[in-house]
Structure formats: structure tokens, C-alpha cells
Amino acid sequence: LKDEALKNARSNQPSGASFGSIFKNPKNDFAGRLIEAVGLKGFSKGDAMLSDKHANFLINKKNASFEDAFFLIELARKKVFEEFGINLENEVIII
Image (cartoon, rainbow, N blue to C red):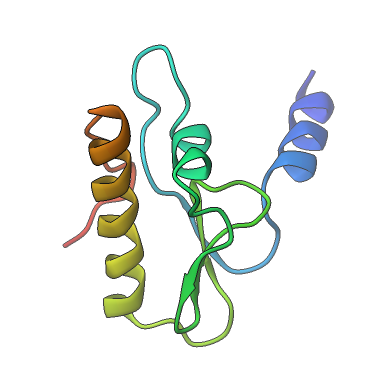
């Protein structure tokens, strides 16, 4: 069972340097699907990128700045709210 979970994660989640999952899934939907639906899958700013494999993952392509990462987080939240009226809740803690 553990091996299956790891295999599933590897096939559906990006490899390499990432911030992990950005948002919690809202009730009855998936944050990654919503982010993809507003056209942000694979979108980047500087070296920060919303994964082209799973849109709810934030990737550090090389030397991503906090500002670029935060910009993408807020852009995704704004676009999803504008399109679907859903306020995505952070999974990551921003200090």
C-alpha cells in the first residue's frame, strides 16, 4: 500500500525543488484543477513556476525569489476567486 502511494505521488507530482502543495483542496473540488482551469498551469514569474505537471505545486526552477513565489500564489488565489468564487486557503505557511 505504501509503495502504491509513493508510485502514485511520483507520477502525479513534480520532481525536483518545489515548495510542495500550495493550497488546501476546497470542499468538493481540487485546488490543482481550479488553478489549471484558470489557465495558470505551467505559468511562471522569474524562476518560480506553477507546475506544468500538477498546478497546485510551486516549483523553484533555479533561484526563485520570495516575491516571485508570493506573486504566483496570490495570482492563483485571485484568478480562482474571480472565476469560481472560491477562496483558496494556503497549505503552506507564509511567515
